[in-house]
Length: 218
Image (tube, rainbow, N blue to C red; front, side, top):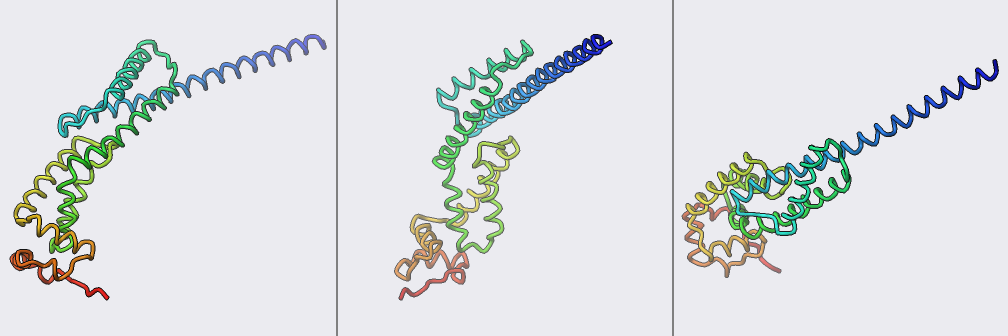
């Protein structure tokens, strides 16, 4: 009787151990799959965004980034074919690093090649009567400052806002002297000596003389 009970207990322990091992193996598979699909989502975003900005902005990853993107694309295809996620955590970490690198490179690119309109709008906003319109244009122009979250809709709105901003600035007939003066006003550095006849005539024409306040330095 005792031997039977011992044998039964051993059998139950063995069954529990097998179930735990099976549960542990299943948990590892789940974690691996989750890591792989997290990485795959980031990689998919990288590819679609690269295609979008190359066509609309002329931006492309550097050679090292292209090499790594190609490597992980090949890895993802093989993983789907084999239906087994190997190196999933390295994959997720690497594509996140690529995305971060592209974000930094994109911000530098957009600052160097597409910031002119934003800079002029910010300068003009200091005296603008239609500040709400200017702020809306700036918001739309800044919507593409970050790599993450870029979409075709955002890009279309960006170029529409850029076109409207260019039209607004062209209608103002801003020359370098006027822009320099407005920049000084924006930084609270303008003095009477900066208010040339050309600048004053422009302010009168645009009905902005009441928007300018010059302080006396003590």
